[in-house]
Length: 294
Length: 118
Image (tube, rainbow over the protein chains, first blue to last red):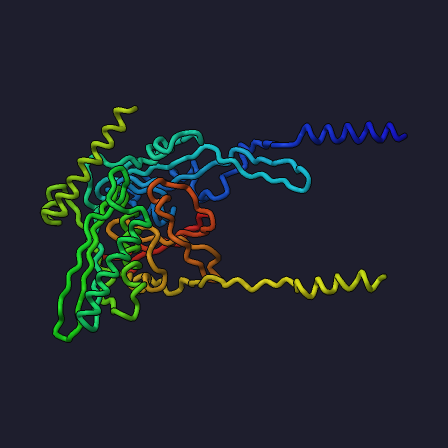
């Protein structure tokens, strides 16, 4: 009897040892990866009509896009399929597992200058593809021609009770703002898609005895959403830490410059324009070098 | 003997105490009744919801990421990180709805929609 029990126990332990590790359950038709959006699929294009539907209607129907090109002529929606669920067999009292992402799919909507739908394509990307391939599928490649819709100045006017406080605050805020931007990895650096061009401080003494300080930060990015977020960061960096010392009298004055390179140079002045051109050239060289390496 | 065994247990309970959890502070919830087409302004929206998660057509169209249910009020989700902005990342975890607002040239809300994304 004892021998029989020993044999059964040994066989059971051997069997459990054999199946320790991963059990992969493929789930080809179960659905999407858990954090993927659920309101877009292969049938979505049927809800829109080429030549009729506008960008506004697509956004109102599907919500925020996952990508928008700088000229806003391409917007994309993506979702990740669920490839499998992995269960790690319990060893002692522990166990685990989780979902495995499968192929990514993108719906790429293209619009004409008037914002009317020109085409809608379904693209499929392997989970093993590079970031570059994924970006290409979503049409994220930097534009050949830099559009100035992705350049924005964030202006802030803050009034202070005295000139001395204004000067001290301006210096402190400038340092804080620079630190905030560096912390976000937003410094001028070729190869990145966002950076600051210039920060300027203008002091104006008002008749009422208040000193008005104007901060102006200029951004340029391939992605307009990045610029929008950075202007938000500047507003936060400048206005929040110094509450009480100064009074922000205009925190939402954003100016968007749009046009060709030449128009940018004219609009932004010689110094800022020259910096932008220098960056464009170095960025272009970086891209060229990348292409040659391929 | 029983007392000897019980006493250390009692002391242990007294020393360690009964674990309590302080109630987690719920993030503020925002109802969307204030959004009235033709009446609500962009400034009112910014005041109530903060920075939008995305802007289109020179701020004419703005979107917000929301979590929760309409009847309880929504939690305004944090904006996607810089990383997500640079390399599109299809993560909508924790976000239930996308609020899309369309303004006219004067900055007054013209149309809006609440899209369930998750």
